[in-house]
Length: 90
Image: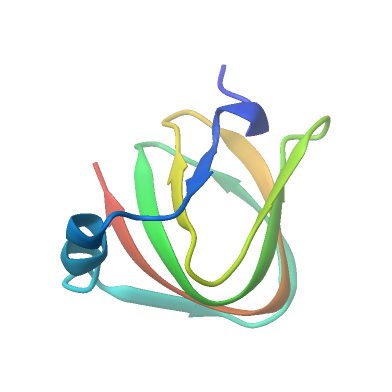
């Protein structure tokens, strides 16, 4: 089972940045909620601050980060500041 340590957080390449801009946008106000990834998600954070925890470890990310969540990850999202992101599943 994947853990928070399997979440990849990095800066996107120019090509990835261009591709991400065609993806849908999702936003969420400050909150905490459980989430289970039934498929891999890649997202580009446009605004906000988020921490994702698996109960043992956590990963934080913010504007400009490209984040890849592995399939089958069960986690808790803590949105510290309203988040907006481009996202793509698969």
